[in-house]
Length: 109
Image (cartoon, rainbow, N blue to C red; front, side):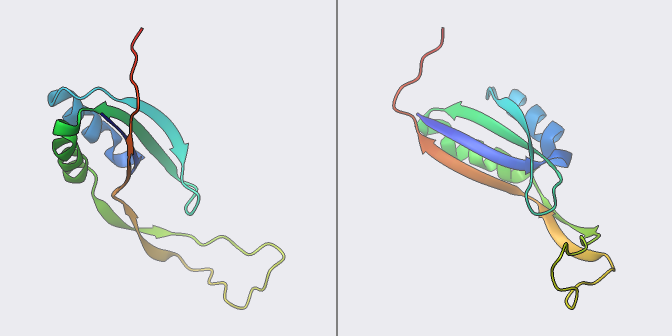
């Protein structure tokens, strides 16, 4: 058995949740915040049998796409302003960061 932790962008949360339900995967959703953009993320915790792991990863990959987004850079606080640009910068966001952990035991009460 495996525990899959998938950190995804909020924009993909509903689509992934619906796909997981359709394929009979149960998941727990947690609100989280990314450190780089300080934007909302959703972290899914999903327990699955080893035989279903590849299918689960495929579902996550198919429903969590990266995209380009303009972000306003934050002004430096007390640091050097030499490299600071006041103009929006285009960065790639989204996709999924997935951790697969072995599960020693599973209990449901």
